[in-house]
Structure formats: structure tokens, C-alpha cells
Length: 138
Image (cartoon, rainbow, N blue to C red; front, side, top):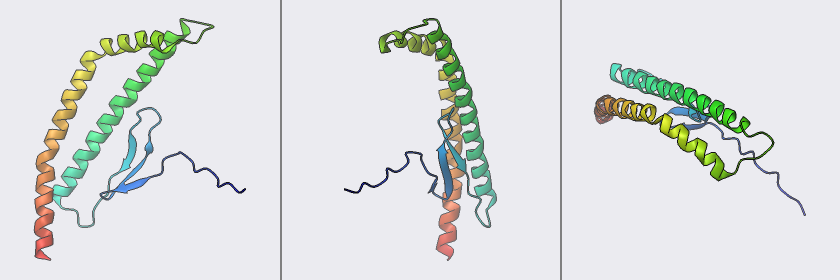
């Protein structure tokens, strides 16, 4: 009986709306994105692309730092209990403490994320109208 080789679970890059999404960063867990620069890009399209890039970089920076801090503190917590494997219940004490200590940071992150996404709405609308008009002219 012949078996087929198993496919690698490593995610491949995919194109979504012209942007190239790569595999997730090992620390931030966010995909690497190569934002498409359109041929004859208008001022509004360029501004929207730059805003999206900046928001993605800000998001990546936040999660990279946060996850690095989390992994370091988790490792420090585990080393306090040498020669034994901690149960899920025992680890939940660390997880709750970490979340409690970082509640304000997460709240500030969410507020900034909502703000950045809201600020993208108007440029996105302008670009959509611009593209619609361009298509109607053709």
C-alpha cells in the first residue's frame, strides 16, 4: 500500500486584495504583510496604504513586546517550581496574575486599536469612491 507524504503544516504566503500575507511572526503571531503598491497609485490610495502599514507595524510592535514579556515571566514562574511539571490549574494562577497586572495595558491597547481602525474608515471610503468613479469612466 502506497502512502502519500504528509503536507507541511507551515503556512504559505497568500494574496488577499493585492496584499501578500506571509506566515505569522514567531513572537507576535501576526502575519508579515507586504502591502501592494498599485500602479498609478493616487494620493488617497497611498495615504490609506501608509496608514494601514503604520497600524500593522504598531500592532506587531505591541504584540512582539507583550508576548516577549509574557514568555519571560512564564519561564520565570515555571522555574520557581523545579523538578516538576505544573498542571493547567497551577499555570492558571500565573495566567490570571499576568492578565490582572496588564489589564490597563490591554485596555489602552484596545482603545488605540479602535481609534486607529476608526481613522481608517474615511480614507477607505474615499479610495472606494475614487475606484468606483474610475471604473465607471472606463
